[in-house]
Image (cartoon, rainbow, N blue to C red; front, top):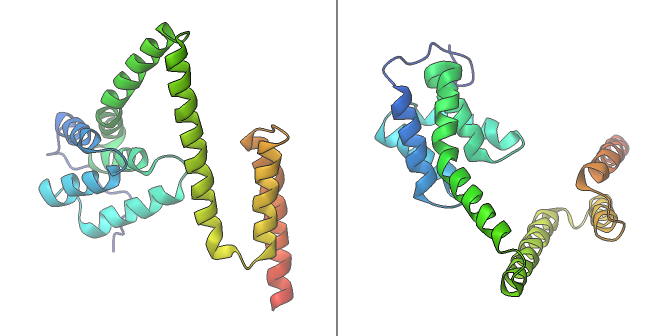
Length: 190
């Protein structure tokens, strides 16, 4: 029996242009809902994948680092047309956001010295930081009764916020320590 994550022969009747177009449509359909629009396009409208195949790809992409929708584009494109299909789907998904971000970045660099723009960007930075902190708190809430989890979350926040260490350095130090503490706690619980 073939499971959804096992390789299968690429589907020949799906053109590269169709892959590009479908992922371009998903990219333009909305912000933050990429997997929803991709699922609608490839499962319901085009019927390129079954519900089970898409669910397996989504589960796999949620496990992997990076944005889910980008991973889904690569996996679906590869599933349907191989490596070139992955590139076509990825290009379709990223071409408009990349062009907009590149244009906006060039525009912002041109006018970066304007005080109004500096204040706007300062506000956006503060908002992004607040959203990250709120997300971190929401992720920690289910573990609030576990002292080790709260301790490691506080250590990570403190090391990044007050010592200025980069996230990668903090993760390389705290991730192995937290895994070791969890293993020790689990062994004691048995």
